Image 1: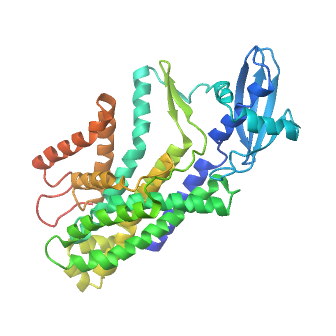
Image 2 (image 1 turned 60 degrees about the vertical axis):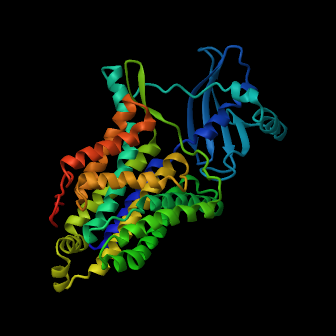
Amino acid sequence: MPLRAVLSRLAALAFLTLTAACAGSLDAEQSRLCRMLLPALFAQDDGITVIDSEAAGGRMVHITFRAGGRDAQERLLTCRFGGAGYSAAKRDLVAVLIDGVGLGETQLWFLKERWLESQVSVMSDPGPPGRGDGLLELPSRELATALQYALGGLPRLTLLALLALATALIYGLIGRINLAFGEFAAMGGMVASLAILLLAALFPRAGLAIEPAALLVTLGTIALWGIVVGKRVLHPLAQRRGQAILVAGVGMMVAVPEGLRLAQGARNTWLPPVGEGSFVLASGGGFEVMVSMRVLGVVAMNLLAIALLLLAMRSSRFGRSWRAIADDPEAAELLGLDPRRTLIRSSLIATALAGLAGASVMLLHGGITFSSGTMMGLAGLMAAILGGVGSLGGAVLAGALIGVMQTLWMVFHAIEHWELASFTLLTAFLVLKPGGFFGYSEGPERRF
């Protein structure tokens, strides 16, 4: 399988995964704004019960409710907004209909300018509809709590695996560590934010469909940086003795975040919340396990990227060339393989993986700071070392194990101490087994 086919399939899979996760989703903020109109339109003497909320047509929200007791008739409130997704007009209420009959312009103006802008409307919110039963019924509260923690740790697990895989791709070829992948992850998150804002301004009616397109723009932009780094930094310095690449990596660790800070300014930019809220996946002992489609979509996208790359490294021509050059670059060059070209391609893929990790953080949290890449990169480096630096499968496995360990630590201990605990355990492990899970303490041998 050619490398170009691998990258195109990766992009297509990412596009389809995010599209499926975002398609037809109810915007939680628009649903809340529409729901807050109910106390202004109907008496609250016997209470207002929201039965259901659903999206319609991308910019419309239907609220099924009951004003009064249980015997009251179900009614329908429809709100139409000026935009959707990341559009600046997503909060602009343009029409309100009650049982299919629209309100007049004067009524709509008072609702927008006098009611929704007041604190009374926030306090009078009747609340979202009942969540209902989960898809699974668990036998105990403890098991449901453990499942919630496991779902919460899935995104970090995949992020560490991506960054560890990027580190292992470069070290496997040149025996040097590039320390700047965390910074490239921060760059990927900020490029994704900028791409979303630009696409939202150009295509205000696109809604959440701009996220997959912004992701493709991000991967392409970060991949170009990978080519530049491979040509101008990694390949020239790999020919020299010593730790020139390590010093260059430290330089990029300083230069990239400083450049990002100068580009965006002193204040961090965060995108508005989009998409629906969480839904009940399971329940047990009175505890509800919540998860959102956005989290599941990002996790699935990252897992697909990891699986596809590992498969390509085993079966594609590029993967065979990478393994041959990693084992014996001189013999591989005598057989017609080009170490320089393979290194540049590896840099492209590795940097794109880091950019995907940063874009995933942005999609989950609405943004990423210019300085947050340092700890992400160190955590990915830690996973690569633990798996056996140069072992791709070991890097992914170690990233998963570190993610599990950090999740367990946060369950039983203070979250601010997990970094200290992680690096302490890594040091102790490497003293006992310097080669990591699938590496060797000496010699060029490595397992895949």
